[in-house]
Image (tube, rainbow, N blue to C red; front, side, top):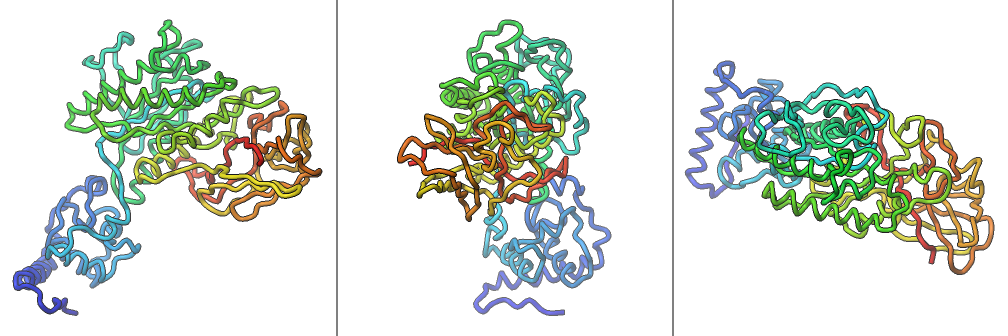
Length: 531
């Protein structure tokens, strides 16, 4: 057996500790079968790197198990994902380097492993809240019956029990936390349906929660529990879901209901010795306000109000981002949606605070071309889960596939893009847009070129690195030219889809943990002036 030799000048106390460690190894070699380990479920949820026996501490027993593993005396560690926990340098394997790092840690020469520094994970609370607001797509319209009816992890929602709301009493003794499954509550019995009778089918929330947990467990072998609040009101504009909305008995209850749930979950968490804060607000909305010129400002006000009110309840210092996805269904017959463009631009105006999560045109739609089918809501939830993981858990500056600049030379317009995962590619599964209406753009794969006087014919589009080059059939005016993407409609709906869409996407290999469907990032709907 190869000896581990201290470097010259090591203190005597270090040598003594090393001798003790080797002695413990020799003893534990014979006694391993008698060691009692923490439960695998608990270890996987709460491990520390280096704690390969799952007892909550890093000590001589872990050192012994490391050596036994490297000597092939044992072929696995006692805890689930032990090889991940033992990978102290973050190089995807357990080697003598990891043993050396553990030795340095036990001797007090380092206080953190390289993997801890390379893989920061933000889990500030036992329960991370997610607030879901919006209109019909936020509450699962046209996706009844719900399909995500089991909870494979520990994600939660609030059960009202026999509590009648309003009035909103977060101290009601019949409130309790239950596993997060669909439907979130009993289905609405009429329209419109205010909280708590606001649920119409499969929402994105359960799959979103499960996606977050799956990513954290896969990459860090830690648990991540989200507690979801779903308060959207079908068919209602911002006037009904904002702070201070008038509760008419049929609409106007969403904001007050979300604050009620935050108070209730905070209390219930404390009663169980848990901590609770809110990680994100999800708004799935915009059809009713598609023509609003103030929609971007309204979104920012909603973000500001929620941050002020929720953080005062939870006591958290962490800001709460607002996740906004674009709508593509309204207006349905012709023209553009001012609200859809603002759903993209608000993320540029308030970076980090408001995140445009991208379009929804790529998902499978119900026959009305407005709402998603259950699989569509699941895929939306998976994408939201991926973005939450990147933004909230890892703290990365996530941005959608979106344009950054535009220029022209002769008949060619070049649009440069922020590409989350290069390279840019064309989707080959969706049909080409603008084939029977707006045919000047039939070769544009979703791109549009126009002036105030009309549409300009596109001859071809070509991907060039992180840019798309649009070649027009005629010379371009010196000014007044606009380039857009998935912005206009002639009223033609794609099969199982909506009336606005395009084919540009990135190469993200992410696959949802529930559906197993690949989910690259599709380009946002946009319009920009061409200088």
